Image (cartoon, rainbow, N blue to C red; front, side, top):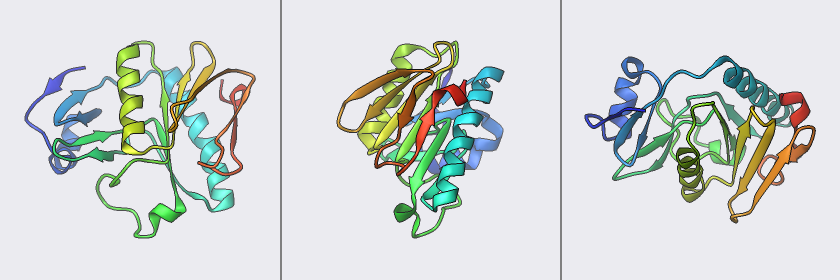
Amino acid sequence: MTTISMITTAEQLFQEAVSLGRCELVRGELLMMSPAGSRHGAVTLRVATLLANHVDAHGLGQVFAAETGFILTRSPDTVRAPDAAFVSRSRLEAGLPTGYFPGPPDLAVEVLSPDDRPAAVAAKTADWLAAGTRLVWVVDPATRSLAAHAADGTIARLTAPAAVPAGEVVPGFTLNLERVF
């Protein structure tokens, strides 16, 4: 990842995003990211599809695709983009903004790539939870596993063919890891 210091606010990032490519703004610093690999993309789509089908069928809220920006902090600004996300219907009463979503998702899904560094993944997970995300799923295609980080600090680690419940965050949804990998 490369850090660029010219863009320091969510609004500047949103204006320039098309010309920048994949990036996030973390405490006022722009972090450039390389494109995801094919296995990462396939696993991300599978998780998002299963989640979206359940959310849509039950009118629970909105599922967001990879690279949707969520404003986590201001001054300095942090805009993170999970691989998939869910926001409950009760938080969408004002509708969807044109720009980045103002606040964290209820569920953030991060799918690991072979080049992801453990410290960077831990920092991103911590940012989600500190901003108010209720559940963070870190999916590892290499080990066919998922680490579920809850807002209360508990972490559950499961491996396929286990099924991972989303609890009260996404009512009635359970992610069957065998269907993901």
